[in-house]
Image (tube, rainbow, N blue to C red):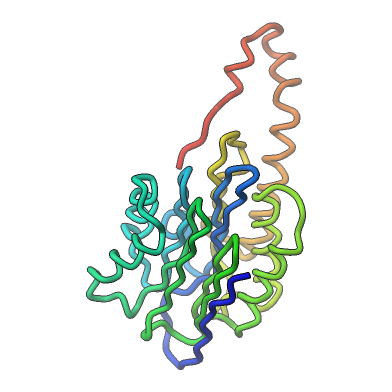
Length: 241
Protein backbone atom coordinates (compact mmCIF):
# COMPACT_ATOMS: atom_id res chain seq x y z
CA UNK A 1 0.00 0.00 0.00
CA UNK A 2 1.22 3.47 -0.80
CA UNK A 3 1.87 5.56 2.25
CA UNK A 4 3.09 8.92 1.03
CA UNK A 5 1.68 11.73 3.13
CA UNK A 6 2.31 15.29 4.19
CA UNK A 7 0.89 17.09 7.19
CA UNK A 8 1.70 20.72 7.89
CA UNK A 9 0.53 23.16 10.52
CA UNK A 10 0.72 26.88 9.80
CA UNK A 11 -1.15 30.01 10.77
CA UNK A 12 -2.94 32.26 8.34
CA UNK A 13 -5.99 34.34 7.52
CA UNK A 14 -9.09 33.64 5.47
CA UNK A 15 -8.30 31.91 2.19
CA UNK A 16 -10.06 29.29 0.08
CA UNK A 17 -9.85 25.85 1.69
CA UNK A 18 -11.27 22.40 0.98
CA UNK A 19 -11.04 18.66 1.53
CA UNK A 20 -11.31 16.22 -1.33
CA UNK A 21 -10.72 12.65 -2.45
CA UNK A 22 -9.85 11.45 -5.97
CA UNK A 23 -10.26 7.74 -6.62
CA UNK A 24 -10.27 4.91 -9.17
CA UNK A 25 -12.29 1.71 -9.23
CA UNK A 26 -10.47 -0.49 -11.75
CA UNK A 27 -13.09 -3.25 -11.66
CA UNK A 28 -15.87 -0.86 -12.70
CA UNK A 29 -13.53 1.31 -14.79
CA UNK A 30 -14.71 4.39 -12.90
CA UNK A 31 -12.95 7.55 -11.73
CA UNK A 32 -14.39 10.00 -9.22
CA UNK A 33 -13.83 13.05 -7.04
CA UNK A 34 -15.77 14.15 -3.97
CA UNK A 35 -15.13 17.53 -2.37
CA UNK A 36 -16.44 20.03 0.16
CA UNK A 37 -15.38 23.56 1.10
CA UNK A 38 -16.44 26.75 2.85
CA UNK A 39 -16.68 28.71 -0.41
CA UNK A 40 -19.53 28.80 -2.87
CA UNK A 41 -19.65 26.52 -5.93
CA UNK A 42 -16.77 24.11 -5.36
CA UNK A 43 -18.16 21.76 -8.02
CA UNK A 44 -17.35 24.36 -10.67
CA UNK A 45 -13.74 24.65 -9.53
CA UNK A 46 -12.19 21.53 -8.04
CA UNK A 47 -13.23 18.11 -9.46
CA UNK A 48 -12.12 16.80 -12.85
CA UNK A 49 -12.61 13.28 -14.22
CA UNK A 50 -12.28 11.43 -17.50
CA UNK A 51 -12.14 7.83 -18.66
CA UNK A 52 -8.45 7.83 -17.71
CA UNK A 53 -8.03 9.94 -14.57
CA UNK A 54 -9.46 11.76 -11.57
CA UNK A 55 -7.84 15.02 -10.44
CA UNK A 56 -8.68 17.67 -7.84
CA UNK A 57 -7.25 21.20 -7.84
CA UNK A 58 -7.60 23.35 -4.72
CA UNK A 59 -6.08 25.93 -2.35
CA UNK A 60 -6.07 29.12 -4.45
CA UNK A 61 -7.46 26.84 -7.11
CA UNK A 62 -6.32 26.93 -10.73
CA UNK A 63 -9.09 25.32 -12.77
CA UNK A 64 -6.87 24.80 -15.81
CA UNK A 65 -4.61 22.49 -13.78
CA UNK A 66 -7.45 20.01 -13.34
CA UNK A 67 -8.70 20.30 -16.90
CA UNK A 68 -5.23 20.00 -18.39
CA UNK A 69 -4.22 17.10 -16.16
CA UNK A 70 -7.11 14.88 -17.23
CA UNK A 71 -6.68 15.97 -20.85
CA UNK A 72 -3.04 14.91 -20.74
CA UNK A 73 -4.02 11.62 -19.11
CA UNK A 74 -6.43 11.02 -22.00
CA UNK A 75 -3.45 11.47 -24.33
CA UNK A 76 -1.47 8.81 -22.50
CA UNK A 77 0.55 10.97 -20.09
CA UNK A 78 0.68 9.70 -16.51
CA UNK A 79 -1.01 11.82 -13.86
CA UNK A 80 2.27 12.35 -11.94
CA UNK A 81 4.05 13.51 -15.09
CA UNK A 82 1.16 15.75 -16.11
CA UNK A 83 0.76 17.37 -12.69
CA UNK A 84 4.50 17.85 -12.25
CA UNK A 85 4.69 19.64 -15.59
CA UNK A 86 1.71 21.87 -14.83
CA UNK A 87 3.11 22.92 -11.46
CA UNK A 88 6.58 23.43 -12.91
CA UNK A 89 5.12 26.05 -15.26
CA UNK A 90 3.07 27.72 -12.49
CA UNK A 91 4.90 30.59 -10.80
CA UNK A 92 2.37 30.45 -7.96
CA UNK A 93 2.57 26.68 -7.41
CA UNK A 94 3.49 27.15 -3.74
CA UNK A 95 -0.10 28.26 -3.06
CA UNK A 96 -1.70 25.26 -4.77
CA UNK A 97 -2.82 21.78 -3.90
CA UNK A 98 -3.15 19.25 -6.72
CA UNK A 99 -3.79 15.53 -6.47
CA UNK A 100 -5.15 12.62 -8.46
CA UNK A 101 -4.84 9.13 -9.91
CA UNK A 102 -4.78 7.53 -13.35
CA UNK A 103 -5.83 4.20 -14.80
CA UNK A 104 -2.50 2.53 -14.11
CA UNK A 105 -2.78 3.34 -10.42
CA UNK A 106 -0.18 6.10 -10.58
CA UNK A 107 -0.91 8.76 -7.99
CA UNK A 108 0.17 12.33 -7.40
CA UNK A 109 -0.35 14.66 -4.45
CA UNK A 110 1.15 18.09 -3.87
CA UNK A 111 0.66 20.71 -1.17
CA UNK A 112 2.62 23.93 -1.67
CA UNK A 113 4.57 25.54 1.13
CA UNK A 114 2.21 28.55 1.15
CA UNK A 115 -0.96 26.53 1.72
CA UNK A 116 -2.57 27.50 5.01
CA UNK A 117 -2.98 25.64 8.29
CA UNK A 118 -4.09 22.92 8.49
CA UNK A 119 -2.94 21.42 5.21
CA UNK A 120 -1.79 18.00 4.06
CA UNK A 121 -2.30 15.13 1.65
CA UNK A 122 -1.90 11.38 1.35
CA UNK A 123 -1.62 8.78 -1.41
CA UNK A 124 -2.94 5.21 -1.35
CA UNK A 125 -3.18 2.44 -3.94
CA UNK A 126 -6.55 3.52 -5.36
CA UNK A 127 -7.07 7.08 -4.10
CA UNK A 128 -5.53 10.36 -2.99
CA UNK A 129 -6.81 12.84 -0.40
CA UNK A 130 -5.87 16.45 0.29
CA UNK A 131 -7.10 19.33 2.39
CA UNK A 132 -6.20 22.79 3.57
CA UNK A 133 -7.45 25.13 6.26
CA UNK A 134 -8.97 22.13 8.00
CA UNK A 135 -9.88 21.69 11.64
CA UNK A 136 -7.11 19.10 12.07
CA UNK A 137 -5.18 16.31 10.36
CA UNK A 138 -7.79 13.70 11.28
CA UNK A 139 -9.95 14.88 8.39
CA UNK A 140 -7.90 13.44 5.53
CA UNK A 141 -7.04 10.29 7.48
CA UNK A 142 -10.71 9.61 8.23
CA UNK A 143 -11.65 10.23 4.59
CA UNK A 144 -9.06 7.69 3.43
CA UNK A 145 -9.87 5.05 6.04
CA UNK A 146 -13.60 5.32 5.43
CA UNK A 147 -13.15 5.04 1.68
CA UNK A 148 -11.12 1.86 2.15
CA UNK A 149 -13.62 0.36 4.58
CA UNK A 150 -16.79 1.19 2.62
CA UNK A 151 -18.24 -1.40 0.25
CA UNK A 152 -20.28 -0.84 -2.90
CA UNK A 153 -19.95 1.28 -6.00
CA UNK A 154 -17.41 4.08 -6.28
CA UNK A 155 -20.00 6.87 -5.97
CA UNK A 156 -21.25 5.50 -2.64
CA UNK A 157 -17.72 5.05 -1.30
CA UNK A 158 -16.83 8.63 -2.24
CA UNK A 159 -20.01 10.00 -0.71
CA UNK A 160 -19.44 8.11 2.54
CA UNK A 161 -15.80 9.19 2.68
CA UNK A 162 -16.84 12.83 2.28
CA UNK A 163 -19.27 12.46 5.16
CA UNK A 164 -16.44 11.05 7.28
CA UNK A 165 -14.31 14.09 6.50
CA UNK A 166 -17.07 16.42 7.59
CA UNK A 167 -17.60 14.35 10.72
CA UNK A 168 -13.91 14.62 11.58
CA UNK A 169 -14.08 18.41 11.58
CA UNK A 170 -13.94 19.43 7.94
CA UNK A 171 -13.12 22.99 6.92
CA UNK A 172 -12.55 24.99 10.10
CA UNK A 173 -14.42 28.04 8.73
CA UNK A 174 -17.68 26.16 8.30
CA UNK A 175 -19.55 24.63 5.38
CA UNK A 176 -20.93 26.07 2.14
CA UNK A 177 -20.56 23.80 -0.91
CA UNK A 178 -19.91 20.18 -1.89
CA UNK A 179 -19.77 18.12 -5.07
CA UNK A 180 -19.54 14.58 -6.40
CA UNK A 181 -18.29 13.79 -9.91
CA UNK A 182 -17.87 10.28 -11.32
CA UNK A 183 -16.86 9.15 -14.80
CA UNK A 184 -18.36 5.74 -15.56
CA UNK A 185 -19.02 3.56 -18.61
CA UNK A 186 -22.57 3.44 -17.24
CA UNK A 187 -23.30 7.04 -16.15
CA UNK A 188 -26.04 7.67 -13.62
CA UNK A 189 -28.01 10.75 -12.59
CA UNK A 190 -26.19 10.78 -9.24
CA UNK A 191 -22.72 10.82 -10.81
CA UNK A 192 -22.61 14.60 -11.23
CA UNK A 193 -24.05 16.47 -8.25
CA UNK A 194 -23.37 19.91 -6.77
CA UNK A 195 -24.52 21.78 -3.68
CA UNK A 196 -23.38 25.36 -4.22
CA UNK A 197 -24.62 27.29 -1.16
CA UNK A 198 -25.86 25.50 1.94
CA UNK A 199 -25.55 25.38 5.71
CA UNK A 200 -25.14 21.60 5.40
CA UNK A 201 -23.64 20.95 1.96
CA UNK A 202 -22.48 17.38 2.61
CA UNK A 203 -25.85 16.46 4.11
CA UNK A 204 -27.66 18.06 1.19
CA UNK A 205 -25.34 16.27 -1.24
CA UNK A 206 -26.27 12.97 0.37
CA UNK A 207 -29.95 13.85 0.00
CA UNK A 208 -29.47 14.65 -3.69
CA UNK A 209 -27.44 11.46 -4.10
CA UNK A 210 -30.21 9.30 -2.66
CA UNK A 211 -32.82 11.11 -4.75
CA UNK A 212 -30.73 10.46 -7.86
CA UNK A 213 -30.49 6.77 -7.08
CA UNK A 214 -34.23 6.56 -6.49
CA UNK A 215 -34.94 8.44 -9.71
CA UNK A 216 -32.77 5.97 -11.63
CA UNK A 217 -34.80 3.13 -10.14
CA UNK A 218 -38.20 4.73 -10.79
CA UNK A 219 -37.54 6.17 -14.24
CA UNK A 220 -38.37 3.11 -16.39
CA UNK A 221 -41.74 2.62 -14.70
CA UNK A 222 -42.67 6.30 -14.88
CA UNK A 223 -41.67 6.39 -18.55
CA UNK A 224 -43.80 3.30 -19.18
CA UNK A 225 -46.72 5.15 -17.62
CA UNK A 226 -46.16 8.26 -19.74
CA UNK A 227 -45.34 6.70 -23.08
CA UNK A 228 -46.34 3.08 -23.11
CA UNK A 229 -43.96 1.61 -25.67
CA UNK A 230 -40.69 3.47 -26.21
CA UNK A 231 -37.11 2.72 -27.30
CA UNK A 232 -34.94 1.86 -24.30
CA UNK A 233 -32.18 4.08 -25.67
CA UNK A 234 -34.05 7.27 -24.81
CA UNK A 235 -33.28 6.63 -21.13
CA UNK A 236 -29.54 6.45 -21.80
CA UNK A 237 -28.97 10.13 -21.01
CA UNK A 238 -25.20 10.21 -20.85
CA UNK A 239 -23.57 12.72 -18.52
CA UNK A 240 -21.97 16.15 -18.75
CA UNK A 241 -18.40 16.38 -17.45
